[in-house]
Image 1 (tube, one colour):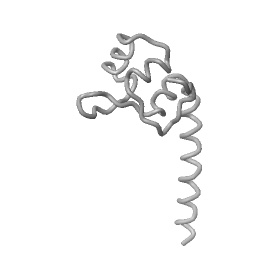
Image 2 (spheres, one colour):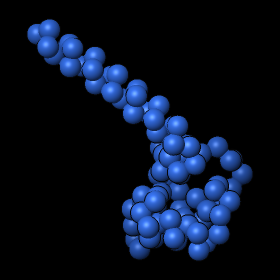
Image 3 (cartoon, one colour):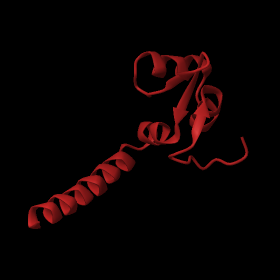
Amino acid sequence: MNNDEIKSNAVYTTLEAQELLKISNSTIKRLLKKGLIKANKVGGQYRILGKEILRLVSPEVEKKAVKSYLGLKQKVVDKINRW
């Protein structure tokens, strides 16, 4: 994999995620089995969203996303309440 940037909406195979995280095959399997990284099975193989990889290595990324979402949600609620 040439590009080391993890794109949050991209879909990665376990091998690609393993290379990005610089971890072994057994470690990626353990993370999946314990539910520490969420994945979906497609055709018998796991597919992992980039945001899951980012969440795993940077909890701050998820905190920022939640804060942004909650701010947007509050704006919508305020607008609805004004109706």
